[in-house]
Structures are given as structure tokens and as C-alpha cells.
Image (cartoon, rainbow over all chains, first blue to last red; front, side, top):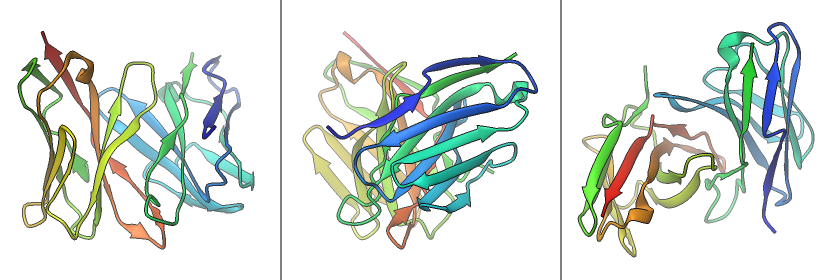
Length: 115
Length: 114
């Protein structure tokens, strides 16, 4: 079953706390992504990972870092969360090769609230 | 600035009509264009995509039109159904060694009324 799994689905944190969002995929996809979705702004790319320990900043990386130590796992870390990081976070993966190289498979999203 | 833009935040179409969703982009290096569909509290899923070497692609009730000179692409949904009601996100990018860095538009909320 091809799947991108995100944990947790809902998370409430206080300003200044550290946040860890986890993402896993079972399709052996090389490329993984973290996006955030805010009203009126669509999906904004935070980080892209081309493979293990091969990560690149997206359009809005400030305040975030990522970790990819295994191909199937990609974590998003917020050190000292801020209220403006309240958002819905989507993880995605893509094959990276072949006819459907660019097709993104999304997880269910994590709704993060920073109080 | 916004590299990929959907100027209409919402659209309402009568059941059976044609829904036309529009997307403009800025980067003429983009060579991959896609439309994703998103239901509330669900994740986006790919509807249809096209590469820059074609101007049009059809798949059932869906057609993507690509106008490279105008940096514009659109999604036409014929015989629109209530179940087509969703948010539609356009995306564009360039295939850099197999991994596309997709830039998404803001989304258009389509409502098909019966």
C-alpha cells in the first residue's frame, strides 16, 4: 500500500517549545518535501530532500530545520516555536525518476497550533 | 513575489457546466505543470499534469491547456459534478535531475451547485 504517513495529526505547543514533525513513506521515493499551507497562500515549500543527508532549502526555510537519516523518514524540526508557525504542515514524496518523477504523494497533514 | 498565481480564490459552476480554472506563472524555465485536488481536511492528490512539449492534454472530463508564451495554464472540467467541489491547486516547476521543485498557487475553491 503506497502511503505517506505523518505524525501527529494535531499538535498544540507553547511559544518557545521545540516541535518535531515526523514523516514516513513506504515507496522508496528518493525525494521528500515539507510544505506548509496557510489561508490565501497555498502550499509553500519549506525544505526539499533529494536523499539521505541531501537537503536543500525551499522558499521559506527560516525557523525550520530538517533531518533525513533514512530514505523512508523525513523530519521537520522547529527549534523554539513561534506563533506565526501555526499552520498545517504537509509532507510529500516523489519518485524522482521515471515517467511520474514529479508526482507528489502527500501525507494527511499535521495541524500545528503554537500558543 | 508569487511565482505561481491563481487569481480567482473561488468559482461557482452549475452542475453539468464547464469549470475553468486558471493559473499564471513567472518563471519561463518551468517545464512541468500540474493540477492537484484537495478536499477539506484531506491531502492534495494529483489530477493531471503536462510537460512543456505539449499544449494540451486530455484525461476524461479533464483537459489542461498550456500557453507557454503567455505563461498561463488552465484546467477545464466538463460536465461538472457536485463531487468536483473541492480546492484546486495549480503547480509548476522544472525537472532538475529528476526531482521537481514544485511551486504551488494559492488555490481556487470550486463549488458545483446542483
